[in-house]
Length: 266
Image (cartoon, rainbow, N blue to C red; front, side):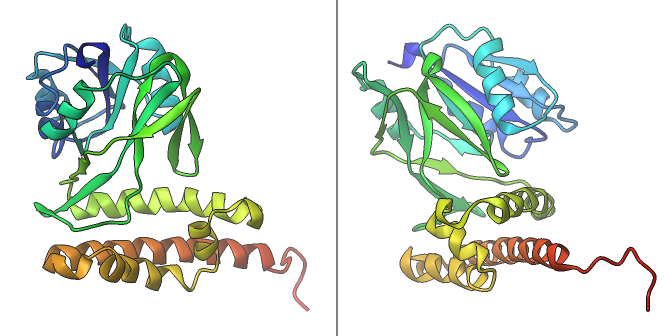
């Protein structure tokens, strides 16, 4: 199975992460890296790995970046392993994938994630499972708010072993990214009919609840209280992210209700 998989990694200034991610892909004959214009050491670090082939494409949105990677980088394998630059594929997951014998109706496999913060593995997180392994010809990405989702023509099965999310970029980069991403997420939540929203986004649209609920769910329901300082750090990140999203939603609501002030004051 491994011989019929091409890992694909997308990057933009991922020097803090890329060496570990690519190092865990030494089993792959060819790794495709699609870069959006990195100005740090990302490409120099990637070039040290002999199985990595670097492609360049200016960024417009995540879905377009992934669809371009599937169609225009010369991938000749049936399967693609789609990875962000802060995803690690540990040996146990590699072994499980190597043993797969997918029937014709299966077009993808999704993995749960072990979240790593400040070098420590958390007992749980709020990070959702992700469909990582897909049949290339039966996969298409679409944009969903700030994120992207893959749609596959066929069944998606769950993997038992977990991938690892380990982002070591500095906090200021996280803050900058969250500000941009959550503005897009707020626009999606605010303009989607209530009935079409999932439970989590319904809670977010209430604005007041999510900034308190998200860290509590992690700390109490996902075992975060056992994770010490790393757990408190992650809980604080989730609270800040949900609070920022709530502010963006509140701003949109206030702008929509703002009276027309184009005329002369009385």
